[in-house]
Structures are given as structure tokens and as C-alpha cells.
Image 1 (cartoon, helix red, strand yellow):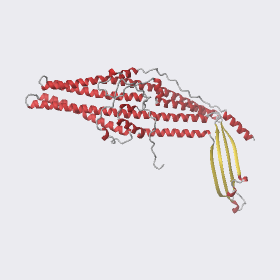
Image 2 (cartoon, rainbow, N blue to C red):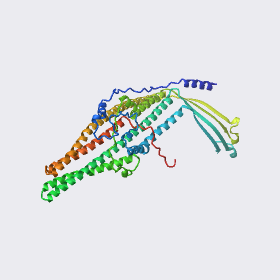
Image 3 (tube, helix red, strand yellow):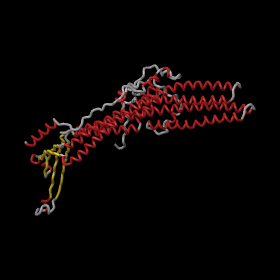
Image 4 (cartoon, rainbow, N blue to C red):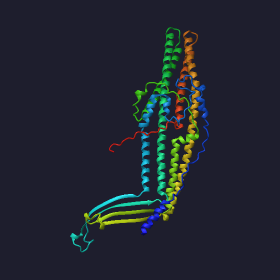
Length: 499
């Protein structure tokens, strides 16, 4: 009767149990109402600043796209190969698979923590055949010292969560799983961003390589004409040497471009889960740079902070650290456990589960570390410090997200303006080189004018190709900073042999 009354009392207390420790409150962030560099993107979206050679499908007057509304931002570059490579990376990148494993681990720990809310049941059985020694049973004949013993039972153990230790631990594990999910999403954005950037850089390097090769061909023709004049007695060795020097200078640029192209191919292959040489045949064919998106709408800083997975991960870790304060604080209070056993014991297997072989036990346990209060308070202090550190990391994540976005916006906007000027410079320098050669062929100007025009043409065309590349890289950077390309799917799970 006393045990039943005690049990009912404890169950009543459990229903009214309190939860010690602070409740998590999402911290407020001092985010500005608008991005300081949003005007740079607005200028880039304006038709007046668009390069003259914008493709037909790249309408600068189109409604700017929000990264949140267009998660798969890589499709806006209108490049089927880029889209396929991104899909490959999302399913086969090994860093993503490692992050997925961490996410699965956090979910498994969360499922395990949920079981602590319920009684733990175990079953046991034993069959023994033993003999006591003469010293253990003095005066008992040897044959009577032999004996068999059989037992079977079910044990139950339940910690009554009167002060919320288990619930706080469950809360911390749940927040840890949320942080793992956000880490996976942040890595997906990072991998897609790196792949898109590397692919754009590859196409830009191939264009700069093409420009260098084309200019080298033109300079070979100029050298051929100068050499022909020299052989005919109408030129000088000085002109021939000068033309040859310019050609060799241009040719010296080609190996560096070829090496950079190869490095970019290797990086793309590894990002998609392949060996470095796997995509050489597919990527070595030169293709134009992907078309730039029609427009970008950065939205507001508040939208950014709700969308960035790294900020979400920092917030989840702050939540977990706050819950762990409650876990540590619960040790200031007694821990009540309820245990029970029901089973059967007999010296003959046939007597098991008979009425007279029944055994049972109900026990109430109390564990209170009040004599170890110094260590308990030290653990609480450490948990408080962890929460303070997590709060600082969250605030830093917010600042870094804002900084990342402002930098991306200004880089993209200024790259587009530079792009427009260099496009016109490349067009004019090509026309100037053509006219200089015509004047040289007609005898109206000297070789120096031709060489200077060709050198200017090479510099302008290379600078334009580089600027176009940086414009596309800048667009990728904006999408990445705004957490565009946050895929709503998981990478493929790798199976382990033998499991």
C-alpha cells in the first residue's frame, strides 16, 4: 500500500513537473532595412549598362529574379552542361555525403534521446548447474551439494523527469539535428557555388586562350609580311626582330592559360565525385561563357538572414547550448528513478512460471548530488559559457552573412559596368588594328603603328574576356551570398560493404 501510494504521488508530481534552466529565445539581430550596395545591382540591371553583345535571351529589362523564388539558380545561366554537372555534384560529391552522414548521426542521437522519456525494459534468463564446495556446505554429502537453478524475468527502469533534465537533453539533441540539417544545406550552397564559379572561370579562361591564339595567328601574318619585305630589300632586321618579339610574347601567354584550363577541369571533376581526368574530353571543347541572368533582386537583409543556412545552423547551436544549461542545472535537484522486476525462479525448469516460483520487485530510487554541489555548479558555469560563446558565434554569423552579401553585390555591379566599357574598347581596338594593317599595306604608315595596334587589341580583348568572366562569377557570388541554390533534396547515401 505504501509503495502504491508513493508511486501515485510521484506520477502526480511528474505530470506537474517543471523544467529548470532558461528557455531559448531567438536573439534579435540589428540588420539594416536595406542593403547599402543594392544600388550597384540596380545599375547592373539597367539596360543602359548592359554590354552591347548581350545574347537575345538575356533581356536586361526583364523582371529581376529573387534567389528565394528561384532556388536552382544555375538554370538561369542557360547552359545544359552546367546544369548537369551541378546535378551530378549534388548527388555524388563526397563532402556532401560526409555532411549527410553527420546529419543522419544527429537524427539517430535524437531518436535515442526520445526513448529516455519512457521506461527501459529488458528481459533476462538464466539456467545454471553448480556445485558447492565442502567448505561452503560443511557436513553435506557431495551428491547433495549439486544443484540446478532456473530464472527468467523482465526488468523495468524509468527516470521520472521531475525537473526536466531529460526534456532539456531532448531539446538539445533536436536543436543539434536542426544544426546538422542546416550544415548540410550550407554545404550544398557552397559546393554548387564553387562548381558554378569554376565552370564560369573555365569558359572564361578558354575564351582568353582563344583570344591569345587568334592574336598570335595575326602576329604571325604580320611577321610573315615583314620578313617578306626584308627579303625583298624593303625592310630592316630591326622591324623583323620587333615583330618576332611581339609574337613570342603573345605565345608565352598560352601555356599559362592552358595550365589554368586544366586545373579548372580537374576541380570540376572532383566536385562531381569523379577522378580529376574524368571530364577532360567533355570540357576541353571551347564554349562561350554562360549567359548572365536577366536581373537580380537581393531582397532585404531580413529575408537574407531567414534564408542563410549558416545563420540557421548558428541559431540551432545556440538553442542546443541554451538547453544544455537546463541539463546541467537539473543536477541541483534530486533524481528519482522507478524500477521494477517481475519474473520466476525455480530449481527445476518445469517449475518456472508456476505460482510459487513468482518473483517481483518495485523500487524507488533517489539520487541527489547535493554533496557534490561544487562540481555541479562548475558544470552549470561551463554550460553558461558555452551558451555565451554560441551567442557570439550567432551574431558573428549574421555579420558575416551581411558582409558577404554586400561584397557580392558591389563586385557584381561594378564588374558589369567594367564589362560594358571593355566591350566597347575591344571592338574599337579590333577596328584600329584592322585599319593600321591596311595603312601599312598601302605604305601610309610604319610597322610600329601596326605592332602597337595589335598589342592594344590583344590587351583589350583579353581584358574584356576577363571582365565578362568576372561578371558571371559575380552573379554566382550574389546567388551564393543570398543562399540561392538551396536544394531541397539529399545527396545519395553510400552503402558500406558487408552491411
